[in-house]
Length: 128
Image 1 (cartoon, rainbow, N blue to C red):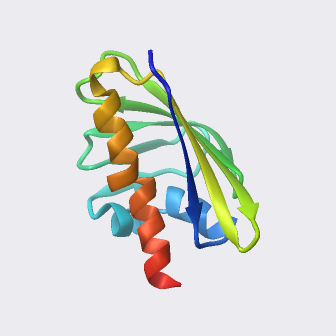
Image 2: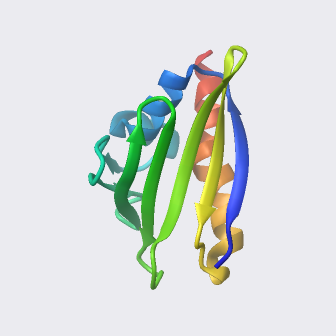
């Protein structure tokens, strides 16, 4: 199955970026929708009214978050890895989304920019 790889530059610290990935209150700000998120390995999450859901496979504060993602229309889960690193006064997030169903590839790829990491990027631009 296809893989999506993207890189985003955030006007924030690694701590702020990691917090925006795991804090449900912040997720609701940038996603503009209901969010439930655990910050523990094995913890579950639910986004966009439960349409996207899964579990945390690896949690390394301020460095890495690996999740198993499921969508209510997918037969098999996919795997999402967020790798966080510093670049001067900014933070880089490398996204690796593996095992994306072929039929959802374009919409999921666009969704990262419009509704997830792109939306988080905009949130950090507004507050700085």
